[in-house]
Length: 292
Image 1 (cartoon, rainbow, N blue to C red):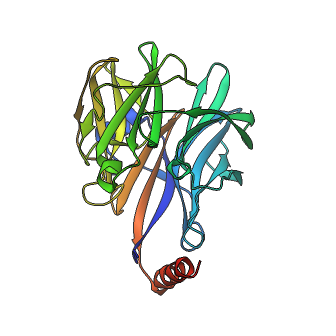
Image 2 (image 1 turned 135 degrees about the vertical axis):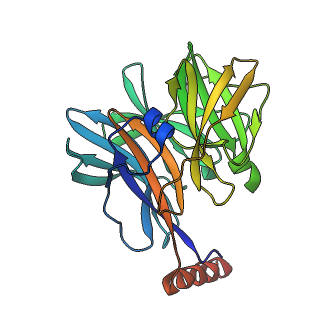
């Protein structure tokens, strides 16, 4: 049982991920989404603009049922919330709903390792209805799979759902000619093993010609901070990278997403929550498992 619970909160900053990861969050104006119901949260925000509206897709989680689903939140140009609706539920936990546009379509690639794999969804009716279009096969069941098109190929960055340590430390890479695959695992996998900068945490971007990926620093706690990882060599045979400075969220207990949405960067931060209610939930969960 973990009596202390992570409660995440989503915010938006009027800057680019590049600038945010250069200078940090200190002193920045952040438009925060209002707190959710007790012992629930929204996390892992990814978004895009359509017709003057910002659509943010996020993990919606409640500790009472311990099952993540995907919600969409629609904002106006002043970042005022207009609507929130659930858009994707599966029998397994969902999180990290990475949004990518390719070949005239809008896709979502949510984290779903408890399903035993990775599924690519297409927006059949944006933003409310999503349909599975491809099961992606890799060398390992991936966590927080992060795609990007760079130098003529699609690249996918992820950690494997094997051991607790590997989930936050072992960076794997795959590549393909098309987003739908087939995907080829990099021959050097894991290309990196470092809990400070290997688990993806947002949208990649290019800085001075090099690909930069926001990575989670999980040394102190899961999702404790963000570090930019600059990929200095990336080919189907070779990989090399260097991690930048740690970026923390002032006054928070964690910070693990930096994703681009036009002129806005979406973030999430966490605080630790401990109360009698968290203890009661954990006792109930243990008893429910014992009597199944």
